[in-house]
Image (cartoon, rainbow, N blue to C red; front, top):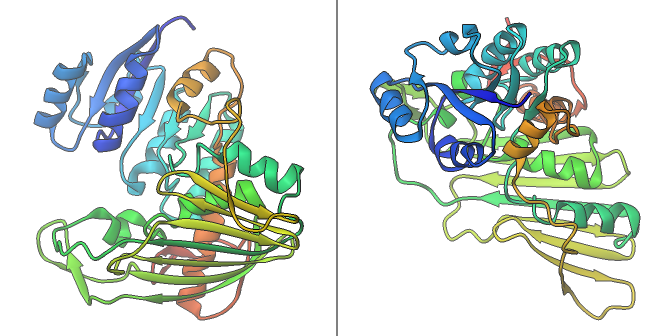
Length: 353
């Protein structure tokens, strides 16, 4: 396929700052149709970036015979519907992270992808990507840490002080997500593998959050999560996320084993390592040919043209959605949950009908 015509559903900061400029730089890619919730904003965006036009309803993009591939950049509430409709209409699909609102929706997306002959992939988080291949080599090939025993992950942000509406705190829009939980589990799944069971404790420090209409919603999305999980490789994983931690440090992943340890800073992709025979931690520099750039848009287009598959795939997304679902179940039912779990949750505190 020489010319690939792109339709974009949802065009927030990530789409405007990353997807659009990277796609426009690829020869043979045309910016076709774009949808934003505000048609006026969509028209301004279309004029600025050379789209054919903006549309008032995202389904116009799905139905258009002039669109070959979709970029889905909305919050999770629309990911399942837009993906299923797009695949059914014969479009290739790149969907942003937070694959779906819940495991049931993610399963439907993964099933549709398997049945389709179209290219599907997800958008990986930028932190953790640069050193991804290096970490996989050290842990799984060179056995730098030996047998993995303990994995500790911390991702915290200070209180924003802003009580305006944000979709991340609207459970009907965000689903079983909290902060960057699913994204960092995607990273850890690549490095140390999946889990077999987990327990979780959640805390909300505010009783209500803004609704889309300017009113108030009961606060259901956790502002703090502490998770304990068993890894398939035999070690343990502890996970601490918070949006209410003043003066927090860097977001880090620490992996401790029988003979060594690795520390990965998600804030600047810096790696520290120590193994048998070393006195202390030393900086680890990725090999130049190992460095993984954030080139998912180009990889997506290349795959459509017959190139290799793109990672993360929908199947990889399904794995981190299994973890997120298990956390929501552990919080709601107050029990240890095996992974992968059966889909039971619609969103935080709300079981499926």
